[in-house]
Structures are given as structure tokens and as C-alpha cells.
Length: 557
Image (tube, rainbow, N blue to C red; front, side, top):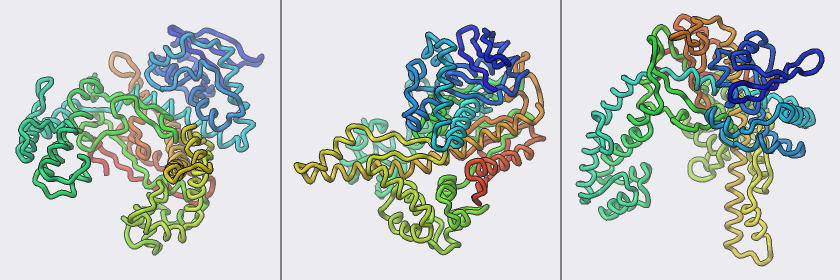
């Protein structure tokens, strides 16, 4: 049963289901939270999860399900264009950011009747789709992901500021005054300048650095790691070290720590408030609107520390994209190569290639359109061994090259190429076309074909990951709480239950009471298998995981 809600600054207006239709009421956020707890069967339908859920979380309520109209509208705009456009009030904001941002985007808030009408429009669009079951599952998974993202922000990733500062000091030296380099970077900068004979060189300036490198005789066109590593000049080692440490300082240095990590209370670790953007990438992958939640480098993972008496359960899925490709194509031979083990090693054991590295390079070439070098040598063997799987991505590429659209397993649709792309293709097809026009058109067609080739696989992998998290969230919610309140009566993170605190495409981290960590590890494995069955039925594909129970993130396998 659905309850439709429209958020306002101090309360929300809801349409409650009852025997006579739908009763309209105005509820305070505390009243809404009470309704969530009393009626766990209700699915909450709202303009966006980010505009409603933070208030419910603050009031101590976590609904089992929701339908995010904004996220659904984005999917339906391409998947079901014949259903008509979403209303302007729903299309007004395109980012999924903070609660205040979205409340501003929704002001003045749409009236309840308009929200109900949009929900009905979306339900009709799904019901009239060629495969409504798949599209319905996609919208449910996307909305569940939005709940998870909001909860991970509210609960926070446990962090130790003291450990982080110690890691920075070990790598960079003591924290410098504002505007100055740390001592290690300053020393390396001086060494680089001396080796290049450029005493005034600023190694942070790419223009200055490239000019100095060329003046010193290095035949380089960029300052990238891969190009520099080809030279045996003595400046290469300190320069690469400088670049590595400068990235650490910029991405996760003291300024990042001050901005993104909140002090802990009542014996708990500090907290990094992740700021995810569900569906932020066109394939359905998540993005982040700040803090680098999708990039926690190994150098600072030792600062991710469980609360006292708790553990981090870290799970990493292996080779999701080739596995979902096997399932989508119903390629049983490729599925068998990865059954409960490393898929790339399975290709070696099957005699398709002679090394795991070649297997990986070849499969990535198949997924991303690599046709040269080592990938180009391996691809013919993969096509011969796994014609169904390779045929699926090849067909997707050809569709893209013609300017067509493709769909993921559940029905997320790729955007069509823009007018500029079509103009180039049209110009190349005219009798006046030059050789330059034709080359440009072929190049653009190949580029778009590589996009659609990967779209179907990366998007389906994202769908599997969403289903994995949604199923895991359901299983964790069923566990009894360890504690019901936090400091000063505030709700405990995760309501005192094991709860998701981090997600990175094919990896999840759950914060769990220590005595339930192994139970959580089993739940993570079971949820992965359940997600596979939910998407692909009885097709024999497996999603093996590396699962570790640790106190600090860097200790995970």
C-alpha cells in the first residue's frame, strides 16, 4: 500500500490509503515517523528521497520501502518517452544533494494532487511497458538505493581523526601553516627543481613542469605517470613521489579532514558523512557530490575504524561485469568459467588464454571496446569461445554506431547521441563529403559504439549491485538492535543494528556489533546470491565475494 507525501519546511502533506480511497492529512515529521513505525507495510511515495528522508531519519524512522518520483522520472524519460514528460516541478532539480538544496528546488512545493497524478502517470508507464516486471524492479531498486544512500549519510562511516592525522604526518610531515607545503613535499620540490636545473620551478604547475622536463631533454608530451615512467632520467622517481603525495594532500589531506569528518561522541569513532548521488552516472552507477565517497585511497583506509565493540564487515564482489554479461547473453560456458571462483583464472583453465593477465585484458577489451594491442590479440579467442557473450556487446556497439539506443537487463535506456553527432553523420553521407568528414564520422560512430557496448553491461552490473544492497538492507533490518539510543538520547547509528556504511560499485562495508559480524558476513553472501536470482532467475551464474571481518578498513583482504 502506498502513502503519497509532499514535504514542506515544518511538516508534510500525505494521502493515506483507506477503505474509501485516500484521506488527506497534514503530519508533523514526528507524526510521520510514528506512522512509519506503526505501518511498516506502507510504501512511501515522494518527490525525492533526499527531500523527505533526512527529516524522517532525524525523527528516528526508517521505512521499509519508498518510490522516488524524481529518480523514476529520469529512468522513464528514456525508457518510456511515449508516456509523456514529467511535470516541470519534478524536472526542476537534477542533482540529488542535501535536504536544503532539494527543498529549495521544490519550492513552491507541488500540491498533493499533482504528486498523486505523477505517481499514477509513472505506474501507467510501467504497466504498459513491453516488460513491466523488469522496469518495475528497476524503479524499486533505484528507490531502495536512495534510502541506503541517505542512511549511510546519516549513520556515517566510522573514522578516526587521530589515525588520519598520524597517517598524514607519516607521509607528509607535520601539518603546515595555511598556504605552505608540508616539509616532505617542499623537500621533493627542491630536489625536482635541482635535477631539472629550474630553481624557480613550481611542480604543481603543469605548464611550468612540462616546459622544464622538455628543457632537460625528456621527450614527453604530458606529465602523466605512464609517460614519465618510460624515461630513466633521475628526476622521474622524486617527481612521481611528489605527484602521489600531492594527490593525497589535495584529496584527503588536513583540509578534507576538517571539512568532512565530524568528531565522535560517547565513545564512538568520528564520522565521515558520505554524500552519494544515486543514479548520478548515466549507466545507473552512483556518483558523489562532495567528499570523495567513491574514492577512499589505500593510504588513508587505516583511519576507517569501527566503534568499540563493533566491527567492519567488508565484502568485495569479483568481476561483476563479465558475470552479468554471461547471464544477460545466457552464455553458459562463460558462466561456468567463473562458477564460484576467479573468472579470469577460469578462462585460463578452459584453455582460452594462457595467462590470467591476458584473460583480464581481453575481457576488459570486450567490455570497453579495446581492439588494439594485447586486447586486440585476445578478442578473437574470446569470440570463438564465448560467441553469445561477445555477440551481445558487439550488437550493442553496432546499435550505437548507427545512432540507436540500447537497454540494460532491467530496462534502463541509453541516451541517444546529440544533434552534433547526427550532423556529422549526415554530412559524411552527402555526395559533397570530404575524406576528413568521413573519417570524423567513422571516429564518432566508433566512440558512441564503445559507449553503448559498455552501457548494457555496466548498467546491468549497477542494477545487480542495487539489488544486492536492497536485499542486504532488508536482512540487516530484520536483525534485533544492539542498542536503541545513542548519545543524549539520539537514535543510535543504524538503529543499533548492523548497517551499511560504505558502497563502491562492487564493494560494501557494514558496521556491525562484533558478536554478529559472522552472521552479517553470511547475510552479505546470501544477499549477493539472492540478487543474482532476482535478476537472472535460475541461470547458473555465481557472484563470489571476498569477505573480511576487521576493526580497520585497511586490514580487509
